[in-house]
Length: 298
Image (cartoon, rainbow, N blue to C red; front, side):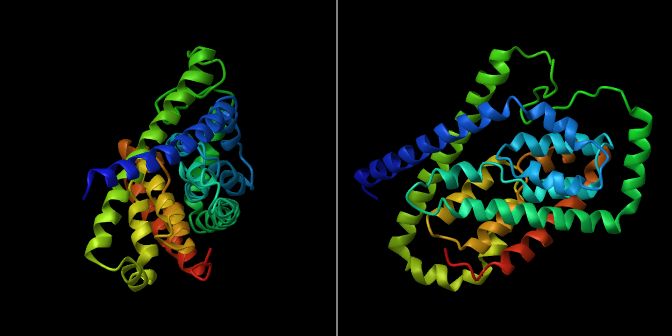
């Protein structure tokens, strides 16, 4: 592969990633004022908890899933509410899609709407069949009502109001650092896949390859989505906006992917078993959503 080709791929990747950086920083700056309130609202005992969880989860911030995981380990929310948050979680995919100004950015609204609806639906289903967890949460909240817990965000920072962080760090430095991380993810993935597909195009016919694997693409995307990392949602979104995978595969991968939330559960001894169950549920629900929308050709 010629050096000029590397340069063109790097430049295109850089320009696309800079768009993502600007959009991501604005989003994270705004959310820095509300993250603590979201944690407080999630733990309120309401029949609408899974519905509210799906609305919260769709916020493009990987810290939301970590906060939800933290609330779950402390018996403040039910399994259904956590599943609703995880399914709705769009992590870093929305900045990628909205940053695709001349392409498929309107489909980001479809992703948001579908993930809210399916997140709430599957969340209620889980709570309906797993009543034991409901009782545990109700009992815990009755005993700890009025006590103040500190909840952690995606980078270990406190998300409660009145925390130890200075306003400068909380509202400027942290959103900037987090946005820069997403910028690095987006650039590396875009650059590496640009090289990969440039090489692959010289080996096989890409159109033939993609058409032959069309019906397997939701499975591929879902397996990528299982990787508990912000980069996996970036990868899935990049593959969609580049036309490599269909909308159904995008939906399947993003429904399974919950950012760093599952990783937080695996790190806690008391929730390791639950983490495997949740990942299995996300995989099943994600594939249902993906194959249900394989007819969408946008």
